[in-house]
Length: 263
Image (tube, rainbow, N blue to C red; front, side, top):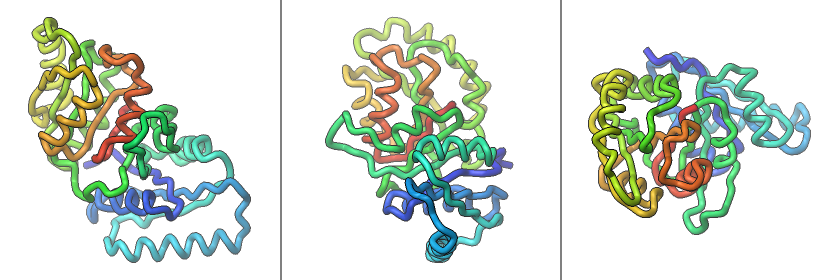
C-alpha cells in the first residue's frame, strides 16, 4: 500500500498544469486512496464569484479526464507569491508530494521557471512533469548518484514507495568526467545499501563517462527508455558538477520525462 495520502498539484488551467493533472490522475489510479489537492495561486485577490467559477471549471476538467478516483480531489484558491504560497500550502495540508507541470526551456540554460525554483526550495519530494511527456506508469526509473556515499538514506523511502507501487525497475547511474578509478570503491560502498533500501527493485548500477553530466544523464534516459528520473539535489553526491542546484535546474528545464527530486 502506498504511503502517499495527499498529492499537491499547483493548477492554473495552463497546458502544463493540465498535462500534470492528467499525469497525477494516472499516477493515483482508480484503486489508491490518495487525495489530489489542486491549488490555484493568484497574484490578485479572488472574489467568491470567481472562486466558485474556478471550482466549476476544475470539476469540468476532471470530468474530461474520465477517470474514477477512489478519493475525490479537492480544489482551493490562494493569493500570493506562487512559490511561497505552494510551499506554505504543502505544509498546512500535510501533502506528501508535490507534482507540478512545466513547459521547460530546452533552448537556454539560464531560464528559471516556477517549477525549477520550486524543486530547489521544497522540503518534500517534488515531481516536475514536462509538457508533452507520456502519461504512463513509471516502470523504469533512473536514480542519479555521484561518487560519494548517500548522506540521508531516508530520502530513498519515497523512491522505494513508488517502485513498490508500480513494480518498477530502478537503474542507478553515475556520470564521471575524467577517471573512474574509484568505481570499485563506490560499488562496494553503495551496492549493499542500494540492495537493502531498494529491495529487489534495484536493477543495476551503470558508470558512464561524459564531460557534460547533464548530457550524459539525458542520453542515458533515451537509451534505457526511462520513465522517471530521480535525483538527490541536497545530498552532495554530484561531485563532478560545479553546482547541484544548477544541475537540478537544468534537468527540470530540459528533461522530457518527469523528474523526481528527493528531499
